[in-house]
Image (cartoon, rainbow over all chains, first blue to last red; front, side, top):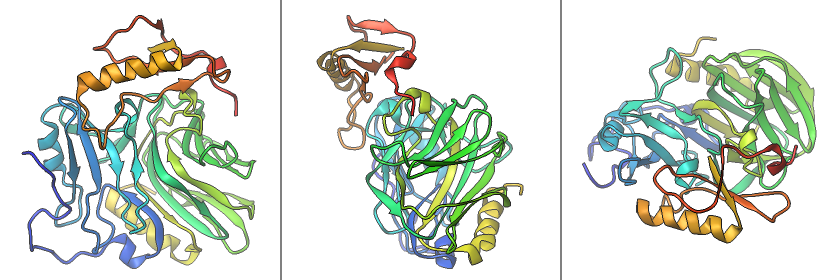
Length: 282
Length: 69
């Protein structure tokens, strides 16, 4: 098939659907390989296939899953790479990568890429230099909450950067080769030992009204630190500000949602929604 | 593997690949992002297996290419 696929696969057919963003609105950025919002009718991703470098937008099925059949059909036995990971929050903060060699992978030889033991698709950052950027950075102020469905790969570099600010090393989130998480806010680092274990993980970071920064791995609180500085980290996904290959993320990601507000009271509900959908053990 | 050279040489290699690969020019416009040495006197670009150039070929970029941050 040629041409573009829109978010809905059958014109006029809109089944009852409730997404994560109905129950938990006001995200400032929302990226997933499932539909998160019943009002969202745009693609989930834009994909380039390796065989001829043609591009297609990929939407979702009536049940809200990534339209894998459309994706596989388009890729036609070759690899597929993500050039745009569309923002479902309504804020237009799409992650983009216009350089072919830096686009993360989603299809490998006509098979969707999945996390270990799971069936849902994911975006894979498996080669040095893969990353995606927003057009402009978003700064978290006061309270915030963000979650990731992520699997760190065993060949992770020493300094795999998950998120990095624009043009500065002072604000970032990274996964170290030994499984440690490392959050740096305004130059101050908070590190948690061996939290990533190579399995699919629900990873969440929150800052509450007391400026406590808490990291949760598989719904377990692993650390609490305190910092009140602005955190302009939502800009670059997968590498540091200098795009240094030794800071490349080696991981698979299926979902990332960001709130610039305190959702502490809803964290358990969000965790349940996400881990149920992706079948992540917590 | 990477080619190293001047900025212009690396940009020329990128253009060579872009021309051959026929990217759509909207969602994909380049083959690879140029990597600047901290000294700014040399650049590197990832090698595409189907395109060669008379540039210096290296297996990987040594640590001096990247500032420790």
